[in-house]
Length: 200
Length: 101
Image 1 (tube, each protein chain N blue to C red):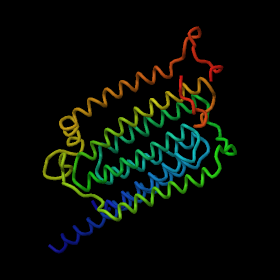
Image 2: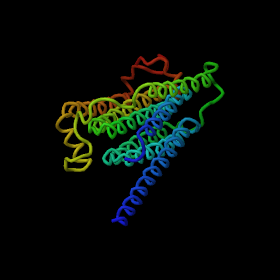
Image 3: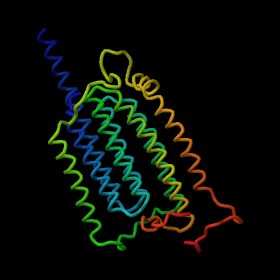
């Protein structure tokens, strides 16, 4: 009896420690990647640092047992969005260093850092004066509990029942986005070119 | 469920602050887009954290929709950047103070 209790508590301690370890590794990846995106001069390097941040976010999702979202995070963000970024960067040939000297307005950088710090302090102070989270539990469906099925099944049931209208709207949004991308980046015919550099 | 949700929320706040700062200090439009992605991911992290906190599937469903909208936004934004490059070979935000066709 005692042995099972000890084994149980040591197993819990191990789970506790591993959850903290996953959180710490994910946090380190997120902060490193975000700083890299901001500070590195080459846009290609920024895009690659963005992948590190997105992997860190996926780790934090796994740590909170959001398995489906972690997989989608890797597939959609790291797999599609960042590849799109890299494709456009290399397609346009802007993978050269940004001109640092030409600052349009003085004090832009210190002011931006100050504003970012103010925003951060504001968020943290607001969360100090109020509760982190309040409200009714499990309003739009139970995440973990007695109901059978894993994370993917529950999320799928929620999206295809309660969130059906938003789901259809995202389908329309994606079609509109694809059409817009084709229209915007289409090369104009040589004869029917209406806007040239002379107009600008 | 061993790491308290406050830690995740503080991490998300820091990531949001970094994204906002990057959006203000960088002038390359592509990097500004990446900073917007950072801010969107910070919000996604808070959504997942509150979903766990309140034992509510709605937070995770919202993250799903944020992902879709973010992908659509990136597609349209990059198309605008490509169209902009066709006219003038520059990618800083000061070069697109005129957006009219």
